[in-house]
Length: 441
Ligand SMILES: Cc1ncc(COP(=O)(O)O)c(C=O)c1O
Image 1 (cartoon, rainbow, N blue to C red):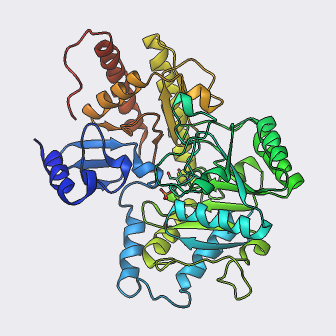
Image 2 (tube, rainbow, N blue to C red; image 1 turned 45 degrees about the vertical axis):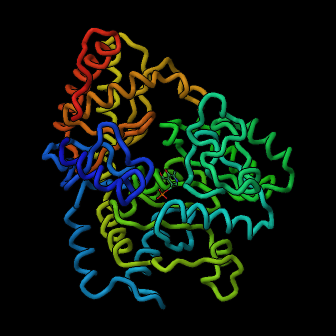
Image 3 (cartoon, rainbow, N blue to C red; image 1 turned 180 degrees about the horizontal axis):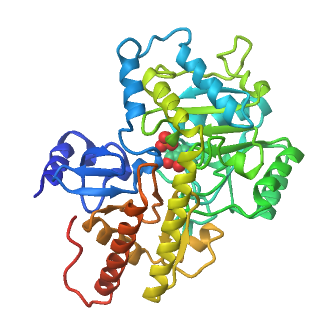
């Protein structure tokens, strides 16, 4: 057994399954020791060019010096005080308000799930309604309000498909599931639940599915439906916010939600998330003396997340990071499409900006039902062959991949050469042309 496997076995004695989130159990079994820029190194001393990027939290590259420096400096005299507000918290709120077009006020918490939880409760508090609409294939966090119809198996698509045991039945049933890119379906759901829907929660690009782009009329159509029915529109920008634009995807789409949740790339891997929106909505939180929607959290506004977010936003302000990662994303997607064509297999390269995913299926890729055509065996085999060659993309079905500001054109071109080799090996193995499975990295 190698050191990663030994540590995971040791961990399993004291941590159920040996890992701290369900999605960290990977095949091959890996533990990472350190990261720098675009590269990470595992416990066994192997280096990988990293496109996993901690599920997209890393945008600038691992251990970015500006983030490390700012957080370390702050830690000397600030971690957490538990009363009042720090100058850094105010500076961060001002920066978010300055950049994210629909946001007049903002509060911070510590994870994307907390952010969507608070945003939904706020919408319920404001509207006095109970139900929400989410979309099949979107992931909006781990709590009962939204943990249904995520990566559903074919039988669960559009059906009542809770993702976990132990969920509150009433919460599952208060969440109505619609098809992404299908305004008729959303309109019909709002008619069926007339006057009951507090909010529509949507990933403006369904990156968890693993890259469904909104049709041109979809987001404006959701805006209209909300305006007509009195539901609030919540953009879950936990992936898209800051990664695609400093103002979030709303700044690109020109569609303004009522509430926005942000997380991940805002702080380059440090724990912080945010809920923003119009002052008249945010003032309902009990942070305001006249508020009526509870908002609490011991660690809210801790210096690690806040300083990391300030440092990250500073890096994004002149636009060069986005220009760089968008150009590399296009280079990667074009290169992967050419590789699939040369291999003579059906493939769709999804993604946007710095995100990419090579799916093995005929197009189009418009809805979650389309995603089900992906050849999971080939997808997983290809990912294992990539990892064995030192390219880390999420070793899980339909996992998207992320480019950071630390990647270079050379990294992309080298990764593409490896991708071609990995795809050939995966196809050969599945055709029975090679007895040897992918080495475990
Ligand atoms: C769109 C979206 N919303 C919310 C979340 C939940 O964020 P967290 O894992 O920080 O709780 C995620 C996590 O992947 C996400 O992708």
